[in-house]
Amino acid sequence: MDRIALFLHVLGAVGLFAALALQVAGAAAVRGSATLERLRERMAWTDWAGPLLRVSAALVIVTGVFLLAAVYRWDAPWAWTGLAAGVVAVALGSATAGPLPPPLARLAGPRGPIALPAAACGLLVGVLFLMTVQPGVATGLAVVLAAAAAGFLAAWLLGGARTPA
Image (cartoon, rainbow, N blue to C red):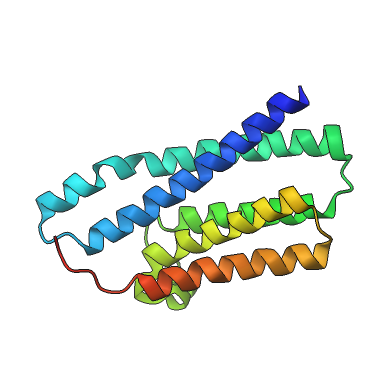
């Protein structure tokens, strides 16, 4: 049963990355579309991002709690750090579904629709590190914060103006 739960946990993680990638691609499509018709064409496939994010997050959380209870007996600090980072990642990914709250809008600036899901991807990369290396709390927090900052910075630097296509 543990191996099936682990498989479903990893499958959910893949779904989270896919949903966030759809969000980043959708935000880039908005910025790069010269006409409304072209925008609709590019955005049609991004309708899956929200449902995929929710289902994947639920799968990761349910299987993660099961694995934590069945295998690690609730005393794994890396797992708690990963859970907190995962919740923040899903919140960042979900925040781009509508208008950004003012504090996030100020932080992200005009690149917010790209930068926030990219920061969430960075967080999830940090969570992957936690799940495989299983470090202590301090190292885990440092890696997760550095990965989120790297994702945000990469999107902010690379998410500038696009030429309409």
